[in-house]
Length: 115
Length: 113
Image (cartoon, rainbow over all chains, first blue to last red; front, side, top):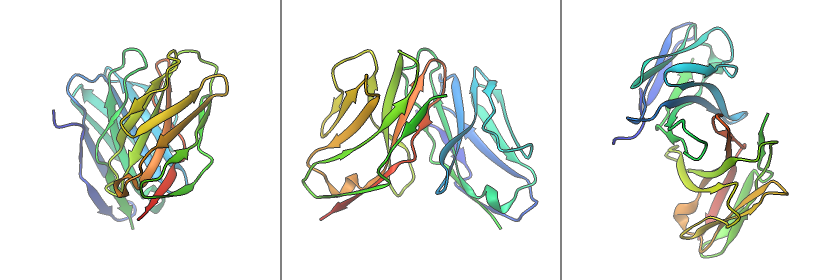
């Protein structure tokens, strides 16, 4: 398996533009997580899905952020409109949902810069 | 809510020496897992080691071992025979119930040649 695949690796956009980040989880994993990493706040959970259903989106900063998981092999995180304070590295991770022993496998992240 | 605390923002160690990174957590659950992840400059998150809360024996993975003190809610990582490639950010993480991983703020480890 190729692991968790995120695209793009880097994104530079202007304030006010729409940004879409993409994630393909590991085949067979039924939990998917979106994290945001900044120097000030560390790794923050934005939202997670079990079996394609959003379970907890309390970490989503505001209505400008939305996430979807239309099927087991694809998820998107959208920011519309983007703002400079959204600049961060965004990670997607996946795991098996059963029990609690399974670690999360991370993609390589998308570094987002909003200018 | 569960919280994870790493009290050492930065640490340094001489090559070939041993270093211990600290982590404490807060939970009311009895069944959970704890993890240490490594993030090198490439920013890839790499699992280093994990510990099941119901196991008394401390986990080990080659040069990496943990000191798990369940009553004290402490989970430290010991790196023996440190190598230059160990230089990275290290994150302690907690997972319980059907919850996702909760991370500490991280410890930046430098290895001095």
